[in-house]
Image (cartoon, rainbow, N blue to C red; front, side, top):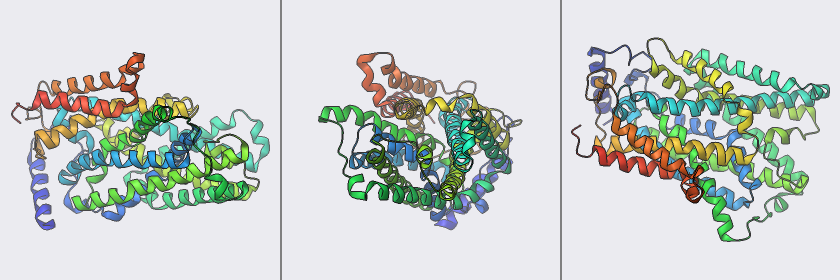
Length: 477
């Protein structure tokens, strides 16, 4: 079966090589990955998800739920449920990458058109730029905290945090310029570092708080079920929104899969357990901070600043830096680099797209997105989920319900093909996307419809999928 699949992929790749490729749609970074280069197995996808899940934003996601009033059990259950939900669109969109060896911006041409694909690709890229900035800001603050521990006089220099931020930004740019193999190398070393720092924080603060009993005994601050539900619903949407980005561009990674089985098992084993485990560390440490300091310290960088031993704090912060760098380039550079390359493949390569991502990440002012847990979860995560949910709805409906997983690979790289629609744009897909986004985000403007915003990803996905299926079901494809 594997051998037959490999021959099938070779035939498709050969048809693309023989086609009259349009240079506005093709470059080596966007080309289908040949079978010889599809080497990622179950372990690679497990390690990918462990590396991406074991990160500071995961910790802050969990700690934000505690700061918002949840008990540790409620927070862990919310995170686990959110990850099980988002795993479904993740695996569905991953199928095309593993089957055809194509990245997200090429895959989305089937539903939005060879030029219309730039709309969802740019929306996805903009969100990734925001994440890139957030991770870079966290890394810069870690460097600044380490300097304050080692050189207390640095705490009085107001320019130090900004210098550290730009220094870490430059380090990310250097990794981007070295390409995808450096990213793969970082995956293998980033996760162990981050697990180590998480366990160190957990043991240290639990000991100071008098053990795990007091840490995990803090009750929920919600007095009624209705009060809890009002917090839980947007929080769950935020959990789904956390990985709604990668749920779209997962073909960027599964295009290297040895088989469908490898990517499915690897992702199913890697994502929910790793995310939930590390979230538990964030939950427990934040609960302990309430016991120790009387209020929740949701930022682990700030908490590490409480260490009295300079050597321990420095080692912990260095580990945090390595893990943050790994997550940033893997989760927030691969996709937007391909997306920006898709705008003009002749002039924008993977590395150039990565540089654009780095600059855009600065312009999005990540320090404002991390003002507090409300801005992070209910503003950033829930807000952009209303943009990405409709894209997922259109993609999944088109690939599985309209096309039955059958794509014309060569046509994805040529003009005037079946994916040309009207001047390269499928207006039905654009209309479905616009309708889904409008309905999902209208709750921000109309107070009585706030619940639509609280369910932004789910509402956007369902509305866009229904509108697209209605518009395309009688169209010959």
